[in-house]
Length: 484
Image (tube, rainbow, N blue to C red):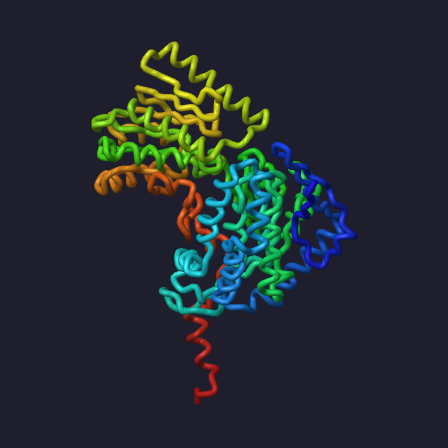
């Protein structure tokens, strides 16, 4: 059985750390992953080391230099001949259960988001002048300002989508924060690998970040880290995030990212015979990629009547595309809880077909995917995930929007297939009810560099500004040597 060590603990000798073993199996393959269990003293020492190293090294570097270092690390992971990339392609399918080809393609597409040109987009999306992270810069209202990242930024990650922690981890590095990330039990490897690669390509940054683990629900261990950090970014279920909020010190900035619902919209302009198959293919890919485990994954589609392809016919196209994708990217094996959720959703949909004769349920004989078709508008409701989708027919896409308003707090991404005029008309309506991202179908699970997650800022939310007001400048003139 292969064994891998998770985490990254600068300054803590491995033989002085307690390790717990997580076991992952897939078919005849098995992997043991050792995760660190730190004492209170080790937590305090590691936090101090990261904080001090960031003050000494990271905060003295220019943001352009930091972006160049991140770019070199990401380049290693994009190189399929690099040992780190080969390890990722070999082990991540085993750990997460996702199809190996899906992981390979997904990693490449995702990692390209963090090359240096894309990081420049991250920066200018939040800062008109990114040099504000390096030194005082003039402000539009007059005076000067400088942005300061946290002394110690704690990330609490969730989920099993490979590489997902990189988004917030890299955001923290760009604002020059000493960074500690807590990996999820479901995928404990990738963040630690990235930290080690970063230390290899730039040894001066080796002590500026750490990757740790604690068992979910271990409040004592969590609290030890919460009191060390001055900013906390957390991902997960809403109940878990609410519990963390109750433990975060009142002086600590807390940025939670909870569960969201995303969906698609297909206008009649996209529903002729020549286009509908392509639209269905792209929509199905958004569902298949990582089995709807991301907050940006669609759970239902509103399809407009009046096109040459009807919504019911589109549901058939969509089912065919899910079947084709299942051949190329087989769905991962589900846990008992996940299988139960899918079964409960299917049972509920089957019951609806008895009460509503126009409603149908299409599905793979082996249960790998399911498509429910509703011929009448209905409210927004979650699906069973793991390749379960509802297609809802509407007379006009705009008719679906009012019913979304009660779910404002949970709305995120909408994938749209429509002509330009309809796209902009829908965007105004969707934004008014709380949607924060509108993209093309086929791109729902691949946000652009600089995406404002849940409508917030990646970098600005992490910093504080120090301002030199004009009054201070003007008063300083009176004390200059050149004044008589």
